[in-house]
Structures are given as C-alpha cells and as structure tokens.
Amino acid sequence: MSMACSLEVRAPLLDHKIVEFAASLPSNLKFRGSVSKYLLKQHVASRLPALDVHRRKQGFELPLAAWLRGQLREVARDLLFSTRSTGRGYVRPETVRRIWDAHQRGVRNHSPQIWALMVLELWHQQYVDTP
Image (tube, rainbow, N blue to C red; front, side, top):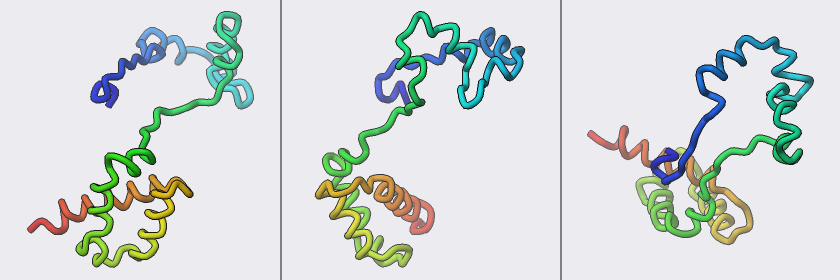
C-alpha cells in the first residue's frame, strides 16, 4: 500500500539481526510496566526529544472522511442509495440517510460506517447478484 501511494516506508526494526537480538533479551528489558521497547527507548533517550521517544503509537490513516465529502461522494451516494441497495433489507435506509446527511454536513464523522456499508454493497454486487 505504501508504494501505491508513492510513500517510501522502511521497517528498520525488522532487520533479522535486530530481531534475533531482541528475541534473545529477557522480557524485563523489553517491557517495563506499561512501557514497551524499554531497552530501545533507554538507548535513544539521550539522542532524541522525549516527546518522540515516549509518544503514543500512531497509525497512517486515510483521509476517508474528506474523500466521502469530496471525490468519493457521488460513488458512495450511488452505492448506498440505489434502489437495489436500499431494497436488500440489511439496513434501514432512513438510518443510512441520517448518518449520510450528518457526515456530509460535517456534524459527525461517520466514515467508518459509510465505508463498511459501501464495501457490503460492493461485495453483494460482486458475489451475490452475479449469476
């Protein structure tokens, strides 16, 4: 996925020598209370800002909420509100309409629910509707 988005991603801690070394360490050097990677953090603490060493884990998130209000809006609306989709009986169309409208107005981010409904509809079209 990183290459599809033109991102250069490396996983230096997956080098086999580092993995072998880490596997040989006792657990009290890997975890100390709720602190994971304890030995690594101790090693880099004097070289990096404390905020970087002790920050919470963060993932790479797609800007799905913005896409569903922008470039994916028409595709999503067509998928969610087609006669075929609303007639399946899996969800209440009025509920889908309510979360859609709230999302589009920016009242609340319903992108996970909208995305799940889109995927369900696409799956249904691909595997159930196809003869």
